[in-house]
Image (cartoon, rainbow, N blue to C red; front, top):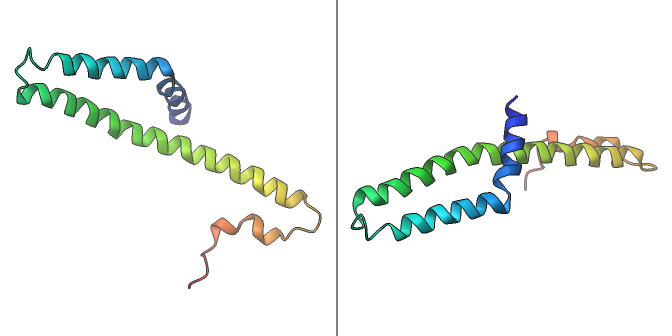
Amino acid sequence: MFSKIAQGVSHAVGSPWVFSVALAVVLIWGASGPLFGFSEVWQLVINTGTTIVTFLMVFLIQNTQNRNDWAVQKKLDELITRLDGPRDEIAGIEETEPPSK
């Protein structure tokens, strides 16, 4: 369930429309500075908002990256196993420890 939501949100927030909305929010916030005397509360509004959005986006980005990594790995494994004479032990090498230097 989370993966479907994360995928939908990732596609949505990666769109030019959402970027435009975010840019507009920042511009409106910046323009409202003189109205609020550039107060600490005025600064706290944007700081809190961006912190919350950043915190949540980290999890969405990580989920998307994990799914992409998994898909690429499966495709590479398929290519390796279909080649003539590949070494099958290479297909799952990411699950082993790298050699020490």
